[in-house]
Image (cartoon, rainbow, N blue to C red; front, side, top):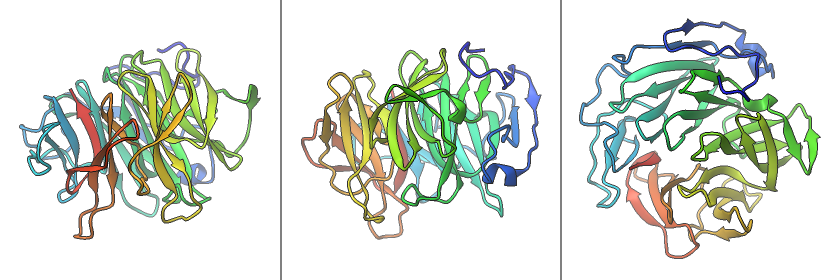
Length: 341
């Protein structure tokens, strides 16, 4: 067990199967204890789909993404034309990958919608599945492939509304330890321990040490960038008006979306934050980006935007992280970019 994780949760060993049934209505009303509906391991031979093309593996270097036309994971060279892709991976609504691990979030619609958080190995075979109430939103894997995080909308369906509620989990694959919601992590804002019933976290991004992480916390009508510590199990706010942070591979900068307008149709713009100087730089993408950007390398970020009016669910663009240049289309008809090297 990671020493800093909260004690009320029980670590799940490599061969354990655990099922915990709770009332979903309690969750949606704001219950904070034990909202995992089902958590369990599957054998390494299990699959996230009945049919997955064996050519879609985490072989890298490649850009992995969700193909909008099929809903399945695909990949293409990190450098190359937007059409040179290999398709046929598992079906996902949100996807991310690093090293030899991938995380696939799959929605199960219903009166009380659920999300399956599916851990995949390098051959994109299912090795573990955790099911929680809510709608898939964000997914992240640390550079080592050992730390995973996902966010679901518990109610509502957009950050642009004032009524949404999120639940963000962290899973340590080294120990099997699962924190189903990080809302109870001790939080410090402006040097003072913060307590409030409206705390929501989303968009975790991990440092290379698999201990520090960054995330967004919303409380009292404001969003903050927080730096978290897994071992100490603590979080401190660093800066206001930072959403969906993404830490650069070298750990020096964070790409994020900043609220720059009250227009619900276009409230955000992409920025980069230098963690040493805390200087913000607006990126050359001027369209509103509702995504957790992914670093393609230390100087470039990728992100999804709605499709170009031809029925596609989204396109993936890239832009330099220093504010220069112009946006470039890299995947036509794709979302959830992840650069695997």
